[in-house]
Length: 344
Ligand code: SF4
Image 1 (cartoon, rainbow, N blue to C red):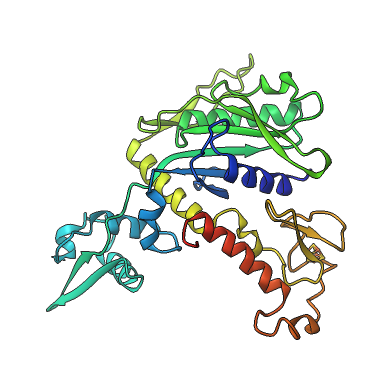
Image 2: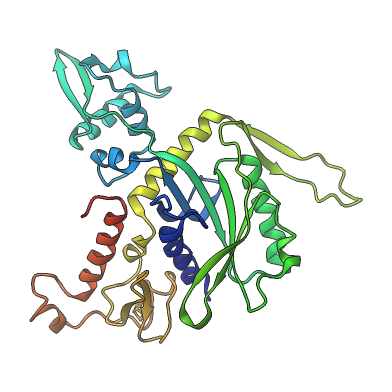
């Protein structure tokens, strides 16, 4: 199976079954392709605290970026001049004022003027709604070379300790996952064996990960010598301080909250007459022209087989809804919102 379809199925499975093997689950927020500027993970699972999603909901469906997060953390319960309650940002205060106006427009804080001074007051306390962050790397077709490369990459993830757990999800054949390939992985990394036989899919943990200490300083491995007899150079690394990790984890969680994993409709072409959805447990995109699931890269404005929905599809039963393509986007959006507990 292609990586894109594989990734969507891992997301759908995680949404219903996380954490693996625990009855009752955590009602996680699952998203794709998120991380830091240096490292992006295929699947991110955010385990919220008990009641965390409900407490996060008043801040709206759109994420809070780093500037808004800093603002809501420090905004006081009573009217205060903003420079007296917010920490010095380390950049010009006018950017802070922009964030204040944005937060006011979004109804997150209140503002008033006292002469030239802007005073602020919070409307809601920003909750510590993120319990654990789990990173999953997806590699359906794991061979020896890919296992070596991935093993190194996952070692970096373990050393940094930004996520509480790191997993590798790979496709299992009839005989399971090749043990020699898994030996290339760090022991701290969990392994999910994904079976996609006969169109259905299921995942099973075959190696449990170790919990990483996200509150300790992490290590960024910048350069590592090959270790051969010709290479006596030293490894280069730098520390990632716990405060940076705490901020990044919240930023990643906020982005996951906004996007979910079904946001693929935003970059693909559901307005194409051949765009279809299959398997209600996803649903997952499928291309009728290709007769198979298409990738996100294929299903773009440059697809040679693209054909717009016939205008007739937007009349009759569709005049208000705007055609099946728009209905597809609404369906995916509704499912995404339901995960955040905003729809009944
Ligand atoms: S024909 Fe191209 S644009 Fe249309 S659904 Fe298939 S892949 Fe997407």
